[in-house]
Length: 85
Length: 274
Image 1: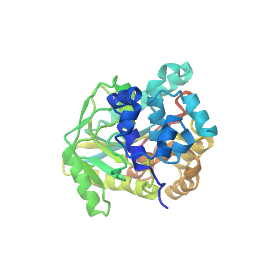
Image 2 (image 1 turned 90 degrees about the vertical axis):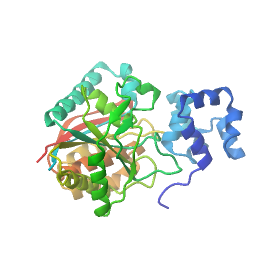
Image 3 (image 1 turned 90 degrees about the horizontal axis):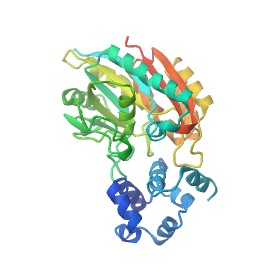
Image 4 (image 1 turned 180 degrees about the vertical axis):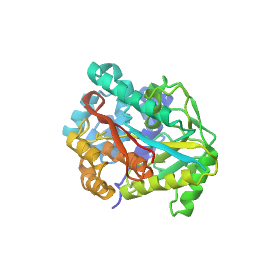
């Protein structure tokens, strides 16, 4: 396989959240935003629980890092979760 | 005919801006000097146009379509979209559509198939070096977005060959202008993966050493090592384009220093135009 499999809708969410307005809306009304994407129940649960390793298997690493930066997780916490769940 | 005015390379890690005040003074000073030295060399080369080779950090492309290579052929491109890049003075950046379209045509005739865009956003990858090099006025910028972010990526050999193609395209462009190349990114770093924050100094030093050896030695080393040296290290592809344009010769290291605060092995280099 030449490239990894991706969860398209998760990646699209992370991509769209690069807009400051979009991320502000997401932080205020997460469920409303998530309803616009065809994100599966397992992935939605992982988002709710900040399950970094689970999400890391389904998206690009730069998008993953951006998402947690934009939603307010400190880098040290992000790295800890990446390594240890 | 146009002439090749030289090639340059510089790191572009976002934390060079976002965490600048947290960088220890000694490292700040070396980074500042390295960027400014590159700026002096670029000004001395006096280019009318600068081809900037950088990845697209999801600023233009998404999983809907992520091209291996995209040439910016527009008259104007946009400045960086990242909110923390607001300090960069250029919100619109002039392109050189005639040169860019000439390169695209040469590429198609030569068996390369870039995509083209008539309006790109030039994110921090292109703009941090342009900013920190202290250029008062920018030459016309031809962006070349080369995928080193999302697999599959162009092969290392292909990136080197892209450099050769750029050189041939410059030297066959009919107007008497001077054109330089700036490759950005690298050296080692790791973003959003379990090794995030790692800097592989041994890899960086050996890569730098091999830029002064044969291209086969350099490419072979990178083929073997890149898969385990952090995803950000893939950006060395942009240096390979610069190296290919210089004919694989004339590499001069300006400075290298690992900077943990910005989580990048920061490298700065130029190639003599010969």
